[in-house]
Picture 1: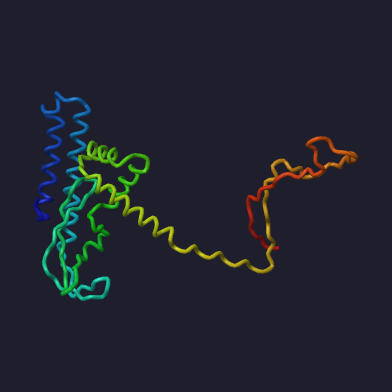
Picture 2: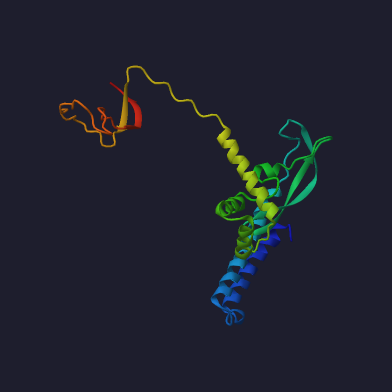
Length: 235
């Protein structure tokens, strides 16, 4: 796979013309609509992968100025370029970025932080798709669906790790302390709304109570009321 942006730009129109030739040429004439639709979809994904690759090459062309500071404050020096595989909805895309390191430090690629690239290389869009698919389905069924539709083969372990990572982010959100309620201002009126479930607004005149109650009868006629709203208003 080329890392030259000019070569990628030249390849994109060629691949698009090749796709047009397939649709209008003899190769597609004897195929069903399903096969043509699937082939066109896969080749459009390949075009998307080429353009995403062009984006990565363009962003990685600029070498960060030294020194580079790690999140812990360590000053890092330039070492070389490190490749990684970025798993996107278009498929696997090669990402080569500048790598900085220091003695006793694992090193860092500043471009990863700039692009919000995960350590495993999974795109946020793909993780969102995987998490949505595994909400009501098993990992193996989601893996089969991604492979049949996108032509992307992921292991069950990769899906489990992706969902577990997303779950950790959700847990961190819920772990945040709740924002304190604003204090009530002075000179306000507290309003409480309630659903009386059949409690009459105007009570009828009570009949004369019997001297003795029958079986199952009570003197009280209370009904439940549920509070549905509570707020304050100005006087």
